[in-house]
Length: 290
Image (cartoon, rainbow, N blue to C red; front, side, top):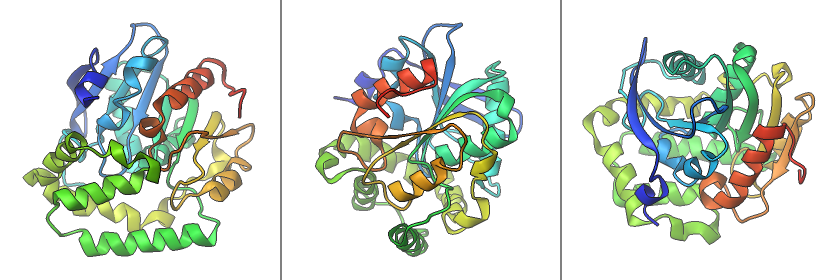
């Protein structure tokens, strides 16, 4: 199915923020319903949630957005860090008139969501960390995966993106049984974003976040909101052992391991399961099958 058919019924628009320029959002759902803010990973874009927004809009007001420097949001030359993106999140919430909201972030999005929850706990209703980055990596395999990703990033950071490099990056996100999801439309969308001159300027700056991973670790003991760690058996770097170790340090948190084949993009790889778990958690604060 096309991304645009998946997202049919969402409103795509730009929201002006005080310090971070124009931010692209996709929005759906009834006014007055509780809001979920969905946040993508590094070098990603809001289409990571193409298979979730309409399904979840039946019960929630849902918003996915491009971080500053990403997707079609403004490309500002800043010192990009997860803390900076947490401040962008605060300004976006202000611009949308949201005093508080549920947060669901994947990879970098989970990292930013958790740091935001530590700094602004009163603005977070419930917190879903979906294969989040920024957790202390505890396994030797995870540490090796991170070291390898840093080396790969350093080799490729100044190379011109190609269809082949974009395909490889997208396939890295997916379980081996889901590589069919990496189709021409998804590759073409991401390649178009990556080849834009303004993206080429900021991408090397953004990618430094990977190399500085351990400078911005989430202080997990300080998370006080109801928290769900949504994980997969095959998530790279921040593996299940890392997720369990961090979940044990967040009082009252739950860990849910996806049953369907998925790696780093479970919301896209197994959307029916993801949407069901998301609905239950943000409605009740619990996941009965966790």
